[in-house]
Amino acid sequence: MCGGTAISRLLKAQRAEIVELERFNKELLEENDKLIRALDEEMVCCHLGVFDRGDDPKKAINILMHWSQGVGEYFTRDELNQVLEEKERFINAQEEELEQWETWGIVEIAVRNPNVAEYMKHWEKRAIEAEERLDDIYRQQSYNDE
Image (cartoon, rainbow, N blue to C red; front, side):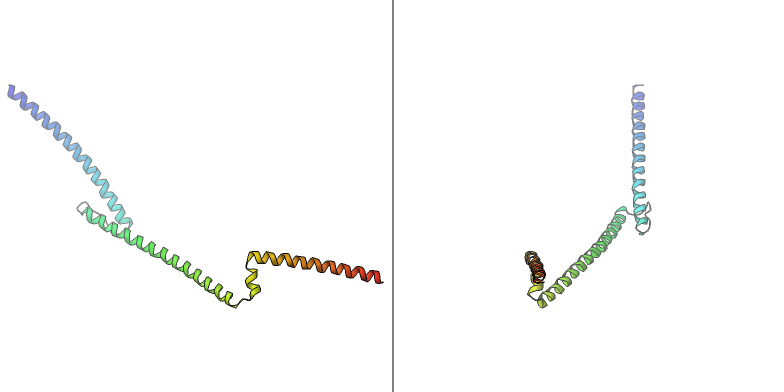
């Protein structure tokens, strides 16, 4: 009987191990189903077809990576075109300004310097005030002469 109890314990241990392996297998299958669902959803969203259980996941991931890289290149190309357009507008504006500088006289150039412009405003204001005082003096003289 001693051998029978050992065999029954061994069978019991094997059944417990089988139950544990079945539980572990079920968890792996559930995880696999989640991955298959995720790959399928990504491929469908990207209009790359569907992913079935028999398909190679490495191939599907490779296809998704190529698609993602292509989309990235598209947006990068678009961004680069925008940068190039901005630079082109800047260069055109600089060329127009250069043409103006080549045709401007000393006054046009001077007034674009803030210091010179302030200086000119100061002296223009003084000249206007002096002319007003001179007009007042002339008016007073004309009243006195009458």
